[in-house]
Length: 258
Image (cartoon, rainbow, N blue to C red; front, side, top):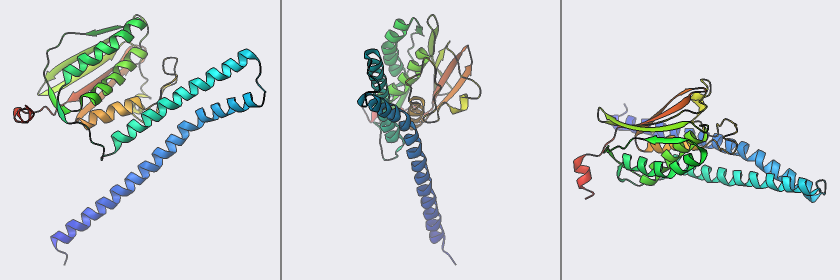
């Protein structure tokens, strides 16, 4: 008869094997998706260079247009590679993030100051009521800032001139809720379940150069901090992202950092 210890070891081994296979499958899918995303810009750059080198394109204005196209594709490639590295690091369980006391409301204030200039330039109102909320989580200030920049930058990007982006906070039942609402173009019901899927993006005038990784990165950062994110949207009326933080630091934990 098997002892309880042997059964436990067998179960753990089977679980480890299953996890390893799952990771391999995820890795294969990721590599396939990356190859797909790289194929188009690389083909455009190569095709443009071949046309220029072979003398097929020689008129001054056409040459300038081909150079401009290659520059745009190379900028996209640089952004894609940067986002890929970031997303890959965040998904790796061996990649640790900083763990120190962070007041979420301070992060909100910081990001709003930075995004306000972009909103003003576009003619979009960024509204945030003064808030003295104190909800301290054990986390990475820079990563949380990065997460919120993705959301606010998108909110401004997809909101037309004259529109509004509103940032609100509340503490309820021991949880911190952060909501970013815009009056932008909204997201269709069919597309809503896909917005956090890596490489998914809607090609619009506002999002020509998106890599489809921003929201995936934001969600990964939220989950690394024990937070959940939900989305509500109505096409033509706007979108609302809500982050819920439930893991507030205790007084004992805070004292350990003082």
